[in-house]
Image 1 (cartoon, rainbow, N blue to C red):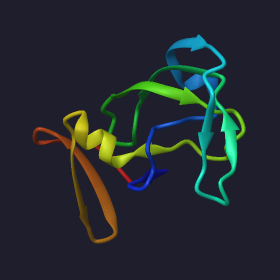
Image 2 (cartoon, one colour):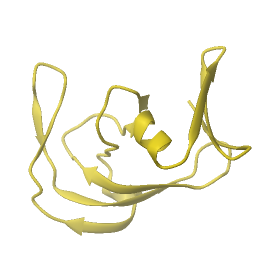
Image 3 (cartoon, rainbow, N blue to C red):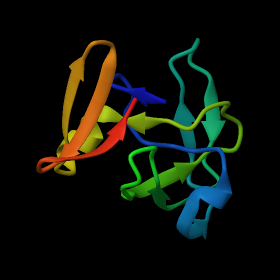
Image 4 (spheres, rainbow, N blue to C red):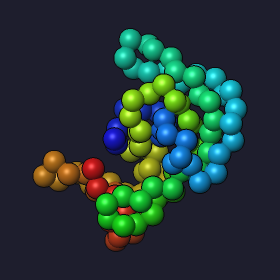
Length: 102
């Protein structure tokens, strides 16, 4: 899931990580009634979206108690990806190459 209102990328699936450091790194506060979820590790996640390109997300918290994996769209912008929303489809670009669709 891609979200503009989140503060971090995060995932619940430790198998997504290409590098991983298990650590008790505090809590992630969720917007749903202020719920907090424990961060159990952190690392880099390599995604392979349906476009076939590889996308590297750095320093992603591992939060095992969430239901969804989340990509933070504004952080992708900060990492050099451009985004475009048209016809109910969000696309992320690196240069002229579409790296992901949501």
